[in-house]
View: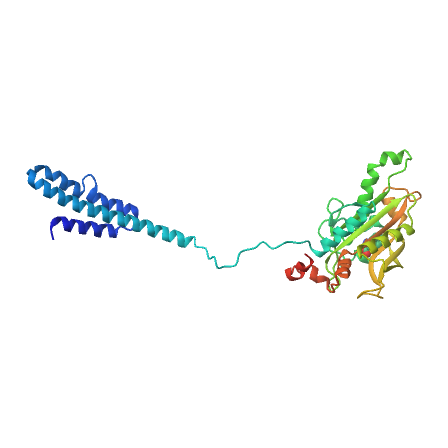
Length: 350
Ligand code: PHE
């Protein structure tokens, strides 16, 4: 093998060993660079006689072209390999099922709350919200609940540390504290009119939200929902309560085939008080009395705690259970299903 063929072979071997483009450029410099072997051979030709120059030049050129060809082939091979690794790293398995964004939906109890709000709004009620961490005053005392009332005991109420209006110390056991909170705000807004003996616009409000009691079984959850209703004016009677609530129930359940019963009961903050039961006249629940709310004429002591004169202002309040209404509306028999977060259950209400 002549010296030029040997050089081409060693160039090929050098290029083949280059693992990266940078290695390859270094290897190239050894042959084709400024002081590379080919360049040196070219320079060396200056000393040759003219005849030899021709043949020698041609031979060197053949070698040079062979080296350049080997270089380009190796460059291409390295570039191909790089592309290959990149493609592997970014590989997509187009046979996998696509990732979809499932359609969302409101929780069934939220659907009920929206429904309640829409129905009462159409009857001229405002919708108010209040804190879930409440003070003893708003949750019990202002609602005419005696110090020794059983609902205050540790068995029913979740207490937290603290214990003043500034440091609320319990999770509200009902939405009734919103009667006081909302009425006090309302009275403040119309204080000047009241002081001047002018009539005050009626208080007509519902207050939906979460409430808490130490209780847990198929029909009781430690966290549940209530919706308070309050209507106070100069001439608001039990009759109005009956009209408003009957109308609400029939609209909510989309049925006139529904009767209501106001069953005498007791709440410290209403007098007289009544549980409201409903009965469907047809369908799967027909014939059973179902309790849906507590209610009554607001107690004079409570009216006073609202900042109003009970001789002049009177009205009714009710507190209903949206969870219960949801169960009845959709035929669900275990309350806990609402709060387990099982998507198979919840997606049925989409
Ligand atoms: N707050 C009562 C309860 O939780 C319900 C109620 C509200 C009763 C308003 C009368 C008036 O059971």
